[in-house]
Image 1 (cartoon, rainbow, N blue to C red):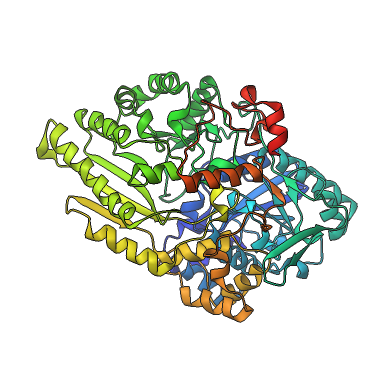
Image 2: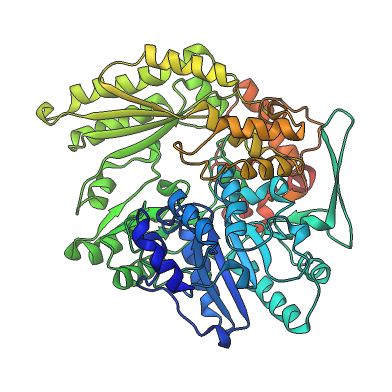
Length: 619
């Protein structure tokens, strides 16, 4: 099969996407393993190979002698056309085997607009797209990742969802599948057995019911499935698997660097952020663990940059100690450090000068909103003075580039809030003009506005999204108020709208996804391939109103399609945070005071301060 693919490589863009043979790729004898797993990333190679989760689970599974995990990525349109023309299947990089030859086909779901890529990869791999048409137990199609926190839109296509951290549950699931494959178990038996593993959701074992007005009513378990599925949490990250020799891409990837995961979870509680709420509580790695992992990765990959990643890296308490250890190793070898997720109120010029001793890059801050009032609504807990102090310190130190990230369309947003986005960016420019020791070098100040999309398991899961026309009007307000010294960017309202539809969809949306894919939707995350007209046609064909999912505000008592997924944060707490948002009342971070959200049951940094009675009340 590999030979067939190689014949096509001269006819496609970026043939290295499909060539395989990378440094640190794992090759095994397929006859010597019990389970073959195709780890599928439903986007292009260069995006997938930049994803740390893929590297972790790929290495984890390949440590087991009985598993061979290989990789597959969504093909670009030129390769897809050739595969269909030649009637050739989509294959995994390591062996060249078609996806239909594998025991397990595992997807990571990072972005809702990649859903049609999931269907397309299955179809290209010779696998029936709908779960009901796959009568045999194997290949079994599983999925995890952040989008799995609302699995319902893909319930018709995925056999099992893995909810939460994957390191422990993946091996538990693979061991079960190994046993059931050897026993010749049928598919219903496999699904029932897998559903008993904490953190595993088998959608075929549940029946969705709806009210007369079209709202979601309930999800009824059958066949002994649990009523709720609680996400898996790795409590000890120091003891968790981390790859010492990640695969090095054959072609330029989005990120070409060692990625160190400082911690999981976030103390901040920004009310729009699904990642922050769904990964609570904060769990960190020890500096000595991270230093060892960094050195191992640098030696095995040859990368010349180490990225310190987390949802808020500056909240990692021993950050200075870690940076000193990494610089002791990296500076003599010209290996630089980067901190991609800084908070302005935690910015330290001294720290950044140490971090960027090898090479200095631009700085990125995320005020999220242009006014103090709206920052209180979203619980950003960041003042304009915090931002100005950070920028002033940076400009005095010789930095000449600042990127500011905002959100447009947040709940309670006004025209004044929209106009304040470019105005705040311009005040940063004026600050540079006052503070810089050398104006001749110039400065780059950019303001980028993503569009607010309400996501499940956040306080804003009940909020409605702004109309697309209203987004365009507010973008116009930003443009009218933007000075020439500031570069202004914004997301496309059309793609953000459909992202919201899929993010808050129920099981009925699956048929619309199937129709959209059948009509030609794929690579929807790429602006040059996204077709809003196809999605509108697909929803019209199913009789579903996309506005019903994206724009409608939900009342407190409405059941939500994802309520059976327990992230650890109580629904009651999220609703209280939503009401506080509408009142503009901020909440403290988890280190300042525990708010009793419920995630303390998983341990982490908030566990010591939680009041057990309060925890019981909230849950």
